[in-house]
Amino acid sequence: MTGINHAVTGAVVALVVKEPLLALPIALLSHFAIDCLPHWDYKIPKHLKRRHLIIAADLVLSILLTVALAMIAGDLAWLVLACSFLAILPDAMWLSYIIWGKPSPHDSNTPLHLLRRFHFKIQWSETAHGAVVEMLWFALMSRVFLNLTG
Image 1 (cartoon, rainbow, N blue to C red):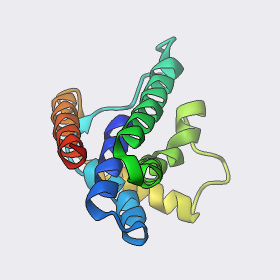
Image 2: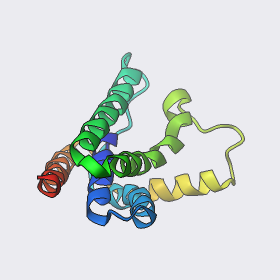
Image 3: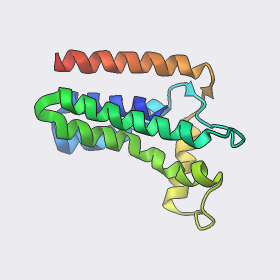
Image 4: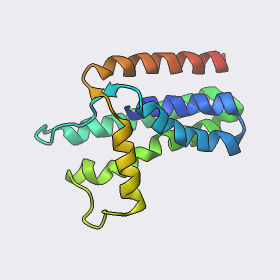
């Protein structure tokens, strides 16, 4: 899933659960839960000259969305920010792949490597058609968020 979908899902978790001790870990786990859904193939070919711009655009849009959702959330703004951040956070484990196209040479047999393998295996359906699922998920989560704040 794209960062923007993880962000809006984390925001919904914050509003539904409201209790930080439960909402924060649930938001983190939501990342893996929605990555099990079919979604867009986020692997951007290295030969694209603007590859890093595409990745940066998703990050910037995710941050802007998170801030906007927090502003709408009122008293739970800080929890929306924290849950959205935690819902996006697991994708940071792919930074070495995003930047250099390969894992760090000191990365085998570490807990991070094992978590990456798990994360990779649960993403069983990454295709161009997954973009439709991503758009539907975003629309659904946005609607839920607005209903909860409305």
